Amino acid sequence: MKAMTVKFESQKVSRLYFTAAIGLFVGQIVFGLTLGLQYLIGDLVFPAIPFNIARMVHTNLLIVWLLFGFMGSAYFLIPEEADTELYSPFLAKLLFWIFLVAGAATILGYLLVPYAKLAEWTGNDFLQTMGREFLEQPLPTKVGIVIVALGFLFNISMTVLKGRKTAISLVLLMGLWGLALMFLFSFVNPNNLVRDKMYWWFVVHLWVEGTWELILGALLAFVLVKTTGVDREVIDKWLYLIITMALVTGILGTGHHFYFIGLPGYWGWVGSVFSALEPIPFFMMTLFAFNMVQRRKREHPNQAAVLWAVGTAVMGFLGAGLWGFIHTLSPVNYYTHGSQVTAAHGHRPSTAPTCWWSSR
Ligand code: HEM
Ligand code: HEM
Ligand SMILES: [Fe+2]
Image (cartoon, rainbow, N blue to C red; front, side, top):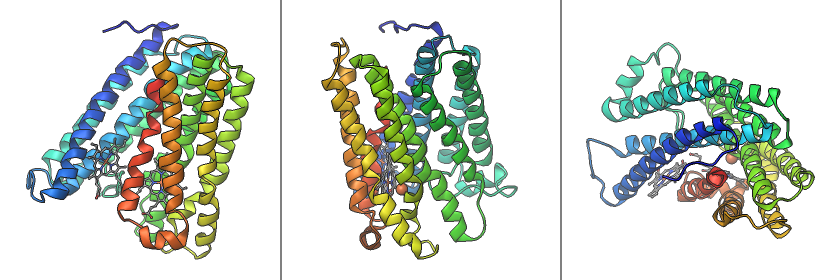
């Protein structure tokens, strides 16, 4: 394997994270294909792996590899931006193994133990957090995620504090801290189904259409700085505009999930209006990528990275922005809610978070 060329030795911890991410991604695809085949052959691998279990493994693997990807990118990017070694490479390696073992144990738990038994064994009676899409993890895994996230945030925040502070690392830190804070709502699960759903969307929506967009923007900006050599002043201005638009539209845009869960009717208007504007920041990311590449001051040897950065921006716009817009207005969503339109949309933006690949 080609040696990883890095400016700072501690950036190399990112390789562990990228390797795990790719491994888990392959696992996710295997389960995705199984799911797809189960549409066609209803009793495929039944009763060993029923559809609902395979689906849970598929989506949980997705979240875990993405988190590995985000963390790996941060460990790669932050030392370079802060112009200093990582605060603690040891902590980064330790947390990696904790997260990998906890993640693997959770997936094995899903596959080997009936879900209700797993809930019983892992203290779900003590604090009920399980059984909600994407947040199916047993309580110890959820607590583990919080501990790993805090250790990770401590490590990269300390690195930024002792080094150079750039707009890119600031936005990345905001995104990652926001991601961790929003995850805390996964511990809030009131008996009232309306409030339960509302808090659930605080995690799911405010991740993908809030904090992840900041992370995406920062990773994209980093790759563009490196590959195009365009001045930081220009890149930073784009980044600030993009994340402002992401938050202005995305936060109240949460309302596009409040149409039919029992919340007040005004969410129909608030959700429709604000979420209809959500494609703007995604479109700006596309403009940003094309513009910077056009104004490039040098030809970077890694043209694949440039192409990937531009490509993910385009796919992110199509899948999230355009496909999102198609079903986001409440009168349209009335007919498409929870249909294959949703599932297809849930897949298309998945190409956007893979932005981190291009930072390799
Ligand atoms: C990277 C960005 C995005 C990602 C990763 C993403 C992902 C998803 C996923 C996985 C779901 C399904 C949730 C479930 O299981 O119920 C969903 C639902 C939805 N998304 Fe997105 N999304 C993104 C951006 C957007 C944008 C920009 C819009 C609007 C312009 C949008 C509009 C919607 C709507 C309306 C639903 C609800 C569908 C329903 O009623 O069943 N999404 N999204
Ligand atoms: C060969 C590739 C893949 C196949 C065949 C596949 C297939 C499936 C199937 C059949 C479902 C269940 C839909 C249902 O409940 O009816 C599903 C759900 C889902 N998959 Fe995949 N998948 C693949 C790759 C991916 C990738 C790469 C991602 C993201 C990085 C992803 C993210 C999701 C999400 C977020 C859901 C839940 C969607 C929702 O709630 O609407 N999948 N997938
Ligand atoms: Fe949303």
